[in-house]
Image 1 (cartoon, rainbow, N blue to C red):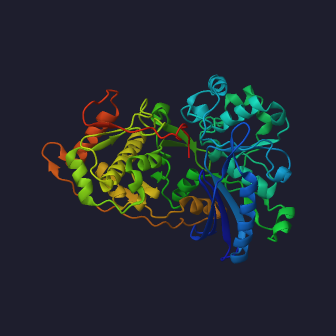
Image 2: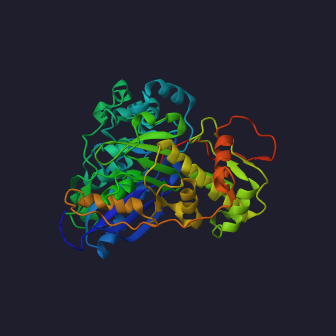
Image 3: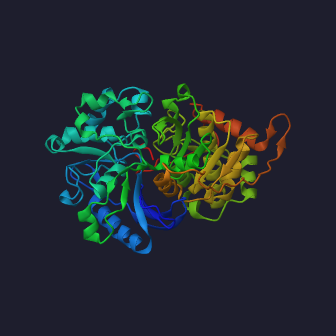
Length: 500
């Protein structure tokens, strides 16, 4: 990479809902971000992503960024539930795909679901429980192979989302540990070998050689650079899983021992210190990988989606007041899991979400209940990982001022900090460009949550502690509650369980 103080990194972050392109300083400071919806369309075999349309947007937006910033490298990142089966030419059919990219949030045909299960291997082969729908990349591959064998047989590579876009830009195909470690079902992170399904289905030749996330795999393809009028000497890095990029931001800042909780559609807690024997696939726990390919324990649940269901139309309303929060705790009004088709940390709870105690009296109380509920889910993730040390919270939930204070109050005597940086994935991905030469810790701004005072209850601590104890007991119970209960309707479009 060209070494200049004013050099900038372009980060392409492909999320399930939106695609973002950012210009980032070498220290991770975001200068500019543009975004577009990640469009999904109905196809003949499955819902598919509009890779041609996204590709046109990526290149035109990158061209504009290069006019405004001295871009010297591009780093790609993406959600862990997608990949693309490609041919040998990135420009073939406009997107290089041998078959359309599958939208993971859709049900599987029953024969595909049943045929895949016995091939999926052990927990460490998978890195997670068997989730619903088309979540796992290996399950997408299996689906493609079964319904389109002729097109499948002509494919050259299967690439995870970040590596696909790196290939589109550079023409170089690689595999990468953080993405394969994001419950792809291709890679056993603990033992560092391909999962048995790869050989069983004859996929070995479709798996390109490994590269580290920070490795420069090539330059922008000359034909692509000339077509869009950008410099030919821009480096393209191998790319990284989005949650792993955010985790790397804290590693680069010297916080390797911290448990990081990222919040958005999913609550994702990652810890490099959890014992592997503690990981329980039946409680939403996962085995991921960091940028060095080492195992990272995880716990995840679809908290953001559930927040919206509990809060209702008030989800985007004014911040929750402490008075409303205290009123709900005092009354014992609580939301119990789970409001979607994902069990999360509570096996068998999918679709069983309900409200117990006096029902929320107005939209403000519904939103306060949603904040309480997601704070409790966060604490449950941390308990599952046995996180006794520093915890850092970040992501969308921090827009609600009381969220961090609630999580801190639910783990008294232990350190909880939070970051208000809304672009942690882009910052972490950009820091990869300096991985090999970094001598100092990367800067990061962390805040201490505001303390929330709850009434004291003799013999049991404060009111929140008693509330949380009862919430955990009821959440773990399979007993159907008949009093003060309101069943929550299952959302019609939530038929899948998936990873971020």
